[in-house]
Image (cartoon, rainbow, N blue to C red; front, side, top):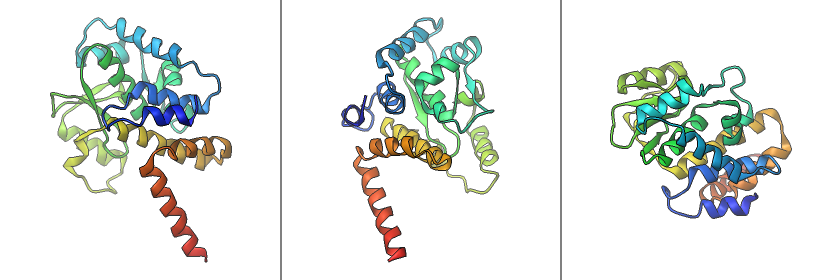
Length: 224
């Protein structure tokens, strides 16, 4: 799978982007020979084994029964952003575990939405604005006050709180955030090959391509 496939998946509206396929397209760009069908089937299987098709039931199935959890020992490993690796190792970061939960729920007819709180991604049911799931910490449930406390904890009180942080995040924005994470990881690791692959994917999205063109232009202005 290459940038062309990724661009096709991202060509729809903000919420018509298929999170499972777009996430696997990203993973496939970084891992030669990835079989997307195999991992879509793995998601189907996880969903099919869930005994209770509710938000609570899905959380218990993933985090209690199957043992999915946050990768605290290797948080910045790029594989944490690859859904196939998350499924295989049952570990990930907040956003990839959230995508897993959302996509398993979708297969069961349960509508969950991502909540793009800065520094720590969450999930909630589409019809419940006050209860949040924290996939990184075993799917624990948080109310609005607890979510704000978590934000203050992970940001060490260095960033101001906004109630808007608990608003739903579109599928397109979720994918972009995953690309932002990968870009930062590979820049930190000086992994030039995979960094270039991520930049190819980012170039397929007009809003990212334009932002990075402006960034390059600003950098040029500084050194000219």
